[in-house]
Image (cartoon, rainbow, N blue to C red):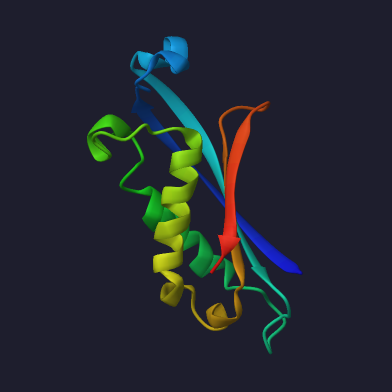
Amino acid sequence: MFTVEVRDHIMIAHSLKGDVFGPAQKMHGATFVVDLTFFRETLTEHNFVVDIGAAHEVLKDVLAPLNFGNLDEIFPGEITTTEFLCLHIFREVAARRGALGTGAEGLTRLRVTLHESHVARASYEAGI
């Protein structure tokens, strides 16, 4: 399996409703490092997985509405955990597959990883 990964980051604010979240129920901020991994079984005829420039542009486009945003306002009524954000970003990237250029039709999987800190991260991975 071949992979290519691109990275960006977002800064957000949110609160997590429910006693299970303890002090995170209060409004707080986070800076997430976001890794987006593209998978394919074989390389394209030009020996690459995906156009890295196009992949990074798609990731930037998906993250733009979230960056410096209050997730409580962007996703009203949702519990915007890191895992929730991974799934949201995955779906948005998958919906923009056509913007990834030549060879995108051969991609088989995506993985979105959000790094909360140097010791904690969450991911969502699935076929596309």
